[in-house]
Image (tube, rainbow, N blue to C red; front, side, top):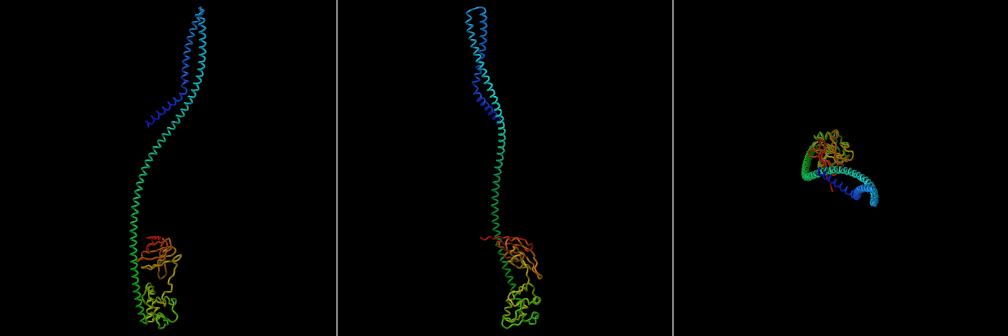
Amino acid sequence: MSTEECVWREHVVRRLRQRDRKECENFKEIIVQNNRLIDHVAQLKSDNLKLSVENEQLRNAVSTGGSGSNVAITTLEKKLLAQQEELTDLHKRKGENSQMIVDLNLKVEQQKKLIAEKEHSLYEQQTVNNRLRAEVQLLHSSLDELKKLNTTLLDEHTALQLAFSSLEDKMRSVQDENRCLLERLMRYKSKDADKLNEENESIIRKRSAKLKRDLEDAVREPNSPISQTVPSIPHNNSAGQFVGNPVSDDEFDEASINGAMEALGLDDEEYISARFSAGEAIHDTVRNSAMSMDTLKAAGYLGQPNPTKILMKFEAHENESHAVRWSPVERLVATGGADRKVKLWDIGKGGNEPRAVLSGSSAGINSVDFDSTGAYILGTSNDYGARVWTVMDSRLRVSIYLKYR
């Protein structure tokens, strides 16, 4: 700052000198002329003093006598009058010059006031300039910091982009791996389902064979408990053609069904399976041996290929019910409907009890299914989604969306 202050002072001194030089040039001739007049007046005063002395001397000489000196005296008096006139003219000019000097002094004072105001404004401008320079320095420093910060942010952005690219690659690899695992899981599930279907088919075949053997044994024994508990219905000898009024499910009461189940040693599940599997077996037996209606009723076959009696009815969903599935391991039924919910029901002898409501779908459920262990349940919906819940805690585990183009 000391160097800048010295430069500023030199600049101010230089400007003041230029101003003085410029303002004095207009009055330089007047000042020189005034000085000359002052010198001329002083010289005239000295000449007048000399003439006065000579005049006194001449007067003294005249008083003593002499005619030749009168001409010299007259000449000197004329000369003195001329000098006095010239002196008067010089005094007049001196007065004019003095008035001009006074006017110039007033102008000089005004110019000094103007110079003082300019200097004050210059000082203020210099102060503002110094403040602005300080602000500029601060802005330069902040700009440098921002540039450094921008560079740091660019480096971080580049690093984050690299990290994001690597994470995207990892995510793609994980998605590919997940897709492969899902495909393997679906293959395993399909294998388990095929195996479970084969096991169910083998169990059904075994039960059908056992039921067929039991029915054949019951047919061979005329005094069996089954033939005694069920009334006989007339029939003709032609295979598969019954005579008389057919027996409906309403006429065949629950006590008769329970008696037949106890006689055959079947529980509820075996009885339900036997009713669907007994159709073909009884048709073959009736076709070969013309069995009586008593034996058909004892076997649980009520004279029709499909069941007609509703054992249980309940409202599962608010709207339509689209899907239903039995659990492979317990008395549990899963239903899916248009209300976007999958519901689990405990089915017993006395009726049904709701166990859980599985939510999470954004569209109506169109199919449900259990896994082979009965621990998971799969539901598909109309929003191209498939979801997996756990039966134990009724929590949504997996959501898969398939978009078709």
